[in-house]
Amino acid sequence: MTRKFYRFMVILAFCSPLALTTVVAADYTLGIFGNANMDDVVDESDIEYVRDIIAGVSGPTKLADANCDGNIDEEDISQIEMIIAGDEEELTIIDSYNWTVTIKKPVQHIVSMSIYCNEALRIFGDMDKVVAVNDPQKAPVYFPQMLDLPSIGGYPPDKETIFSFQPDMVLGATSWTKLLYDEMPGDIPVVGLDFMSHTPNEFAEETIKLGYIMNRRDEARDYLNNFHDKYLATIKSRTEDLSDGDKPRVYVESSFGEYKAYGGNGSGAQTYIEITGGENIFEDFPLYFEADPEAVMVKNPDIIIKHQRSDAGYSVDDLGAMEATREEIMNRPELADVSAVKNGRVYVIYENLSYGFNYPIAVAYMAKWTHPELFEDLDPQAMHQEYVDGYCPGLDFDVYQQGAFVYTA
Image (tube, rainbow, N blue to C red):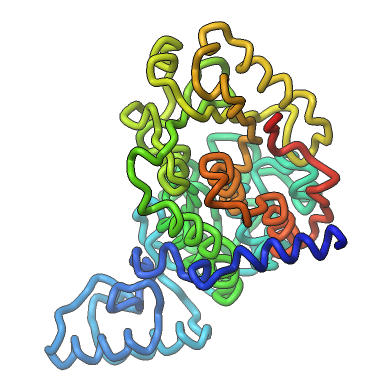
């Protein structure tokens, strides 16, 4: 059996009917004016809902005023019809900073201040609309399209530099956009989308929202249905009914140093541990904190997962640094009697694999490490190649031959 055929078979085996059950559908409200019934899509049911509001049958909702003129009337029905058809000249949304912003369409020139926003635009086939980014050199191998783009400079964002590119839209994480909402001219909309992977529902809502803005709803749904939700839903379906006694204890350490823990309340690690059927030994702690080595010993994790940022990822083909990281943990004297060390269940993962649109791959690795008996048919490496081939146009990369993403011994 050839490697390519084997990879196909593994992916096919994993796509059970449960795998097609969305993990996030109907669990969020799509923040687009025109979504009158406050569900996860703008469709014909919103037209009917507005008609019921006009007739006095249903109560008004915030998003029913599709054209944002202060009235709910027939003009809102016309706007919803145009949104459904993808013909609207303007679209008003609520972004991730809870900022209401109106975007003139079509959007042709974008200043993008987030690599995660760039990932979404690449999936949509819209990187040619990006006229400037915040850091063109951030991921030279992973994101070759960024290398030739001009830079707007670092943080905080400079409004004059951004304005010089005359964008139709400024797009970025809210930590950047919150500094620009009242600074850019009124005809240049500023949209904050965080794409934070530790909140899958918000992540999906933001993906769909940007799909509406860019007239790429099909591409957004394809990524969510056939990658994001497909894998997360299947993993969750196999772990959600586990008893507490069947959940291994997990300790996640950040890339910032020994016992610089990442995995407290609100972290991506906490979310991933929950999805993959583990128990976070520090779930009641802050997002980032310095763990007491004695506390790690006492809590006795069954699994240790170490994040690595440098000497790993798409630009590195040698696993030597990741191997050394694992060996350092295995040789900490104070951890000699910890279950994870005694049983060799210490794993190193490239930190950036846990963020952005490829984060389900990190979840898959964690599922495999946490419950190997439940996920014999799951091949995270094949899944990674599927992501590269299907959702990273312009990236010619073989994860079987290139990169340093995980080290397990």
